[in-house]
Image 1 (tube, rainbow, N blue to C red):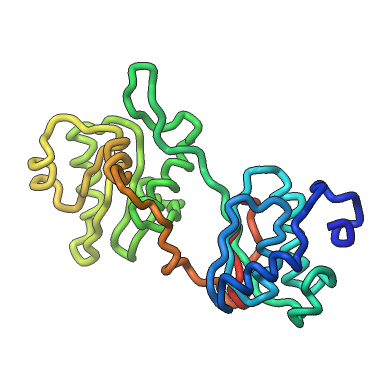
Image 2 (image 1 turned 60 degrees about the vertical axis):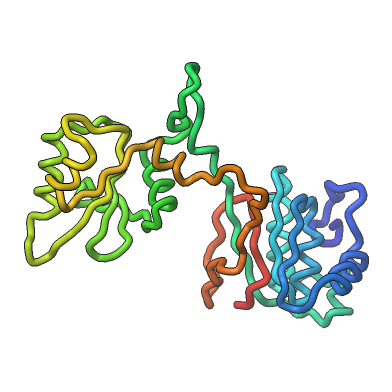
Length: 256
């Protein structure tokens, strides 16, 4: 660590890369995934990367920004000459993605009811709902109700307001204004009044209306014996490395 950062390392007893090399060699094969839920100084990811493994690391401390990310970047750039670099023949390459765990979307108010976490502003909530419902968050600069899309004709609108029947009718008319370009809109709102769910579906064919936070709660998994992360379908890294945003969970090992 000191050789990498030119200063006294923040970790008094970092794990030797040789030890991790031995463990990873015994327990995994090239291309498999190595998980370290307490990343510390990032040794597991550094060694796994040099050994041709994919890896996932999780860390809460600020050293994620100050030590782990710079360390892994040096590994990728071929600027980490220490540890098992020579033994593995590592010369650099690959990449990683860096994610930050957002605050919980739902919170409990003083009466015990589930509500949207007050830490979320309108943009954060819209982005979260897009992620939850499988939409790409991309607010339109022209149409206020287009906050994201799942296709060229399917859009999403998110608001914590209670919408009236008149507002929904107007929204339906605007979404379906062009008969030659039929569009649909998922409306995620705090509530709506004046109609039942069945009436809304019949009256406004261009809209699908869901209430939050109920729709968020319905997406939660309850009573499972196994909450294992399915990592089989993680998105693959793009061929050209992109600038890394400041985030907290690290997924790496894909070759560039």
